[in-house]
Image (cartoon, rainbow, N blue to C red; front, side, top):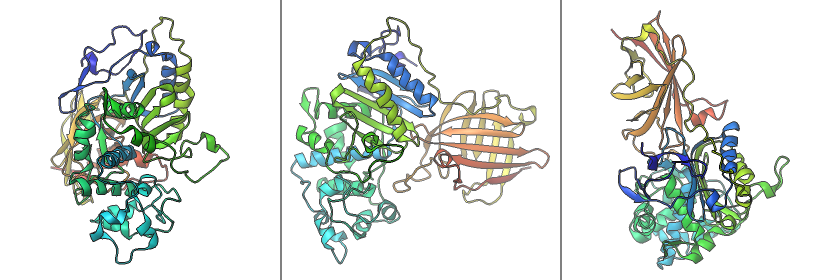
Length: 520
């Protein structure tokens, strides 16, 4: 792997770790323009505090997949935790919302709509037979500020239907739109649907020449609803550096390389305080220290230290700090997003005002490989031969599984779908496996015949127990597959635990165990 594609901290105390060029490869192998690189010390940032942040994240159990920090327009720190890497996109969950908001802003700048336009005016064929006063009053602004007036969050109802627009408009609008904040991913989907109705293009197609191409962002994907509309509130997959470029564009008020890509007035309007979220002081956290109670803009959260951010479930962050002239980007799988932000405020913000530097002393990099499955990597002699098991009928529709071992790997095959798991290393591949990868929202899920990138490793956690970890390295998530063999009975039992379910000790994976008997 060339130095230009390695994970490293840009730091004067780390010799030889410099970019060999200012271009990188997209996931499709295309050269793209990269952000300029610099060192923390040269940009007035204490690199030791960056390392303190990374160390604290590990000590507190926060799983980071990538980290990038910019100051004065230069990348001063970047890390990817193997098997994640700079060339791979990462699914963004609700970080997608900020890009949908940007599409609306561009459409407003082109005179296609205003934020005061009524939502029902765009979809006359999907309006319910009886239009209530509150539904008639709902504006694009209300969608953007999460104040559509819904009685309850309507996303799950929408994604269970074929026509999400019609289902959204049929929901009870209990509050006067624009008056009360209620987090609402389906409202963002409606913004995506409006852009597509006005332009004839999906949000992804519309943004490509207006945002992604000018910023040199490639290989972007976005899920769609059954009617071909981008999901809007989730479903975007983008590289870490693409997030950083987006944050830098917002920090520069929509200006990029001397060109106004996004109107400055829209950036100001979208990222300033528009509505207050409900809530106040709590016994364990005052309102002033709660980053979900600092106000909301147009699909952007206000946060402490005068900043704003886009964020997505499990810790997908683009944090913009105008006072520090800085951008911080993270992709992750963490349940405690507030705790993750707390570390940013505790370690990274002080780094801007205390640029002491390292005094020329080298600074050790943290471990940048996510943990492999614990256990032995030597296969017991009894398993030297390939073995195949015929399964009992199951909901996953799998007939047989087989295992083949070498000193370096285990090849697991379920019918015709194979996953190669390294012993002591991550092995990359692709697989189409039922129920994979895990996800929060089922709407927009690609067909199960579509292959997902996976990095896999295995270890023996008992004499007859093999544990496989499948990390879907273009998502935040992973599966743990435990294979318990019974040599005397010639049987195997496979149990599944996805990483979302694992965050809730009382929850169970929706996939029932698979049981099989050795064939032949």
